[in-house]
Amino acid sequence: MSMRKGTMGLAIAAGAVLLMSSAVAYAADGKAMYDKSCKSCHGETGKGDGPAGKAMKPGDFAVTAKGKSDADIIAAMKGGKTSGGKTHQNFGGKLSDEEVKAVAQHVKELAAK
Ligand code: HEC
Image (cartoon, rainbow, N blue to C red; front, side):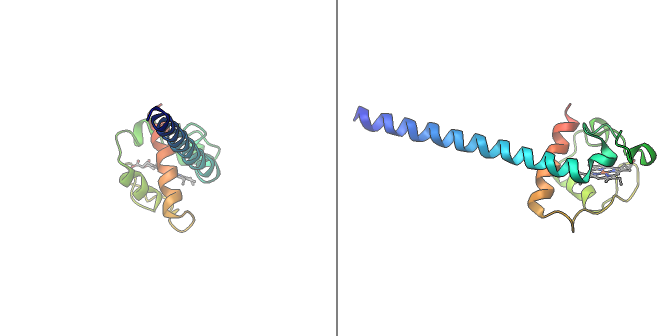
């Protein structure tokens, strides 16, 4: 009986490690795609200080994306209206739904900084 308990504990621990590593990979993908598609305007940390952002003034995610839901952020990424009343560039055709979600997650992390 104690042997079985030990095995169960191991299995649970292994499952937790698996879950943790997939969460890390998910976040990392979002950052990689952000760096590729968004950083030029929004800047490395979302402050809106990327080289292209200097002219476009995309604002600071800590202000523009603060308190926004995933759906709000995803809508902006898919060519929706921004809080400044501009129409955002549409990334819907360039990124899959999974990728859009991962990038939105990264935007939320930057907004919380
Ligand atoms: C060509 C420059 C450019 C690129 C590239 C770009 N953005 Fe933006 N983005 C802007 C500008 C400009 C605004 C702010 C407009 C305004 O003041 O309302 C903005 C605003 C936003 C907002 C805030 C929406 C709001 O309601 O204010 C989000 C979220 C956002 N962008 C996400 C992204 C993501 C994610 C990517 C990459 C997939 C991306 N943007 C790529 C220029 C860009």
